[in-house]
Every structure is written in structure tokens, then in C-alpha cells.
Length: 341
Image 1 (cartoon, rainbow, N blue to C red):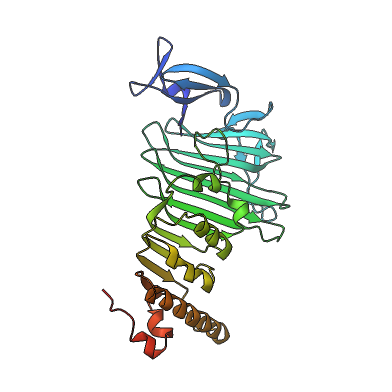
Image 2 (tube, rainbow, N blue to C red):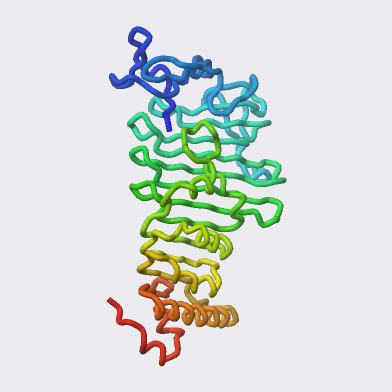
């Protein structure tokens, strides 16, 4: 994703723009007297387009540097900080600049930020982190957040969040971590999957996918060594049915909600060699809840033991410290467990 820079950081040589003696490719923000005048799209040093706004198209709103906008005291009713411009609640855009780069852009309505973008350049002319927030100041729907992180121009992490204000159970979180081959090595899915499946908030971020389904359509998108956290049983079964996990050799399932029947289906994964199945520690202070946990873990231990006995998959079942096979299997089955390497 291209970087955003202040126009005055570029050197103009015969109408070609350079940054550190290299022809610049990206966007240059021309702000004069603390107001945004123009944004120039530059490719290989040449201006190829321009517009009078940044990322947020504003239909003639005021566009000023953040130095002209003043923050007030924290408002506990709105749970936010109000902003004023020329003594009045600000409606418009304000921009932040740091070390010559554009570091942020915010859209304010009547003094309250409703959309916010942060840019973190990596020093090479590309972005390291992009973050965007949509804030529902009326609390009638919900807040949305995205965070995209690159390293050496390859994805390292994507996070999509939604906070539901209507108590309709749509709150969710989807977080992905990538290896050096741009494969997903860890996925965390909490809450309503549908409300967080949009991974890229804008069409102009130069990314070849937008939703999680777009990403899953790529060949071998999951790494051989994969960690899955908190996934629902129905979604996990979809992945099994679609063959998305067929190349996985080492699989971690962490505090998931998959059923016992789904555990049995893991025998059909052709490449799976190791399974690390991890659950929460027992509640020591809540005896009723602890007993329910024990019943659940006994059933899971039996299902995992059966899977191990009928396959070549090496399985661990723990809370990170305690061996749940030893804690919950009957004594006669413990004797059949393979010795730990």
C-alpha cells in the first residue's frame, strides 16, 4: 500500500518529484496555511492525478491541519473528546503529519470524530500499519475497527472488529496472522463472523481481496502449521467440507466450540500429524461451573483418545499446563497412551 507524504518533502527536478533521490510513487499532500489545498497522485515521479481531499471524500467540508482544531475535556456522556474549530464544534476533516508523512485523518461531525484513519510508514515508501475506525456516536448501531499490518510489503496481521450497541449479538472479532509465504498461520474468530468478515474497509488500498471469503478462495491459504482460536462448530465444519485444511500438518485448536462429532472428522485430514487441543483451566472457585467443565473435558478426552487410537495423529490435550488425558481418562485408557517424546 502506497505511503502518503507532505508535498514539501519531495524535491522537484524539472517537474519530476524525488524522495531521497528516488523517483517518488505515492500521494503527496499540499497543505498551505494549515489547510489542505490538493492531494497529488504521483507515479514514478510524475503527477498522474489530483483531488482536493484525502481518503475521506467530504463534499466541500473544511479540511484543516490538526493544529487548528482544539480538543476539549473528556465527555463522560458521549465517552469521547469533543473538538472545536474557531470556537465552534468542528464539522470537517483534520489531518496529522509526522516527520514529513501523513499520519492521520479524522472526520468530525458537530465536534465528534465519526471516522478516523491512522497511517504508519515503514521508511521505505510503503505503509507498515493502516488503521481505520468508524465510531457510532449515537450508539444506535455499532463501532467498526480495522487494523492491517505489513512487513517487507507482505501481510503480517489483519484484524476486523465490530461492537454492537443494540444487544443483537453481532459483536465480533476476526484476527489473522500470516507467515512469510503469505499464508494464514493463526486465525481468531469470536462472536458474529458475518459482521467482521469484511477485512479491507476501502476499495483503494491496492489489496487483491476484500472479505475473508475472498481470502479463503486462494489456493493453500492456510499454513502447514495452523492455530485456530474460538471458532464455531458450523464454520469449522464448512472448512473441513471445502478441504481448506487438507494440507495442515500441525493443528492447534484453542478454546474452540467444535462438537465431539467434529473431533472424529479430523481423522479425514490427509496431512495432519499433530493436534494440540487446548481448553481453559478449571474454575477452582466456582464448583458448579468446574463440575460442568470436568464433564465436558472427560467427553473431549474420550473423543480425542479414540481419534489418536484410530489414526497416526499425535495428540495433546491440555490447558497449557495440565495434561487433561491424565486428568480425565479412565486408568485403563491412560495405560494405552503413547509415551511423551
